[in-house]
Image 1 (cartoon, rainbow, N blue to C red):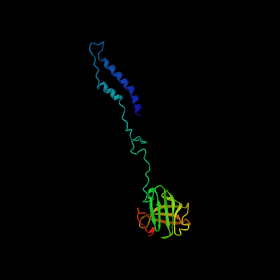
Image 2 (image 1 turned 180 degrees about the vertical axis):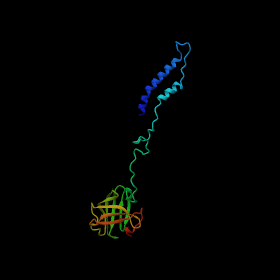
Image 3 (image 1 turned 45 degrees about the horizontal axis):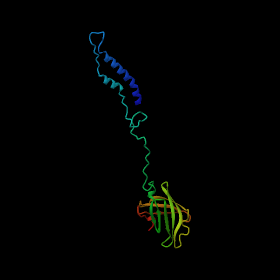
Image 4 (image 1 turned 90 degrees about the vertical axis):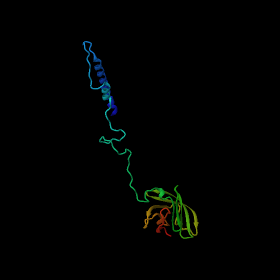
Length: 206
């Protein structure tokens, strides 16, 4: 719109300059014995400046709304996600690290590998490798291969390819724990794991 205003003003400026020049040239009349002086209310430069000056326009640095007024809303604004409860939606880093329960340990590394040690008692137990990945607000763990066995082992408690899911939650004392589902010979056991980051919980055993 600004360029159209300039284009429309230029012909008017040209006419104004021509008219003003013609009037200035009429200072004397060759057919009259006395000079004729043309009186104007403003100098020529002021007249030209008034005609050629572009009209005022709104600040183009601000977005214009449909009503034609400047808007304070950024053009790249998006929907701000709601704040979620502690332990939910905070990313994979909330699960990364060492988790313990009675006679057992679960390690989740940042590069999505880890290990799980399940101890039936102080003598019998097994250690397996694993991979894991965040899924929604929780994680999915896939059991890999057995890397260690002590005593009689666990007799099929864990197996290669077994899928275990997990999510963060709080116990009765409001302590954050990791609860896993899918261990056991029939893949139906739920275990609670504690981390030094959040503190101990009765759910994790002695």
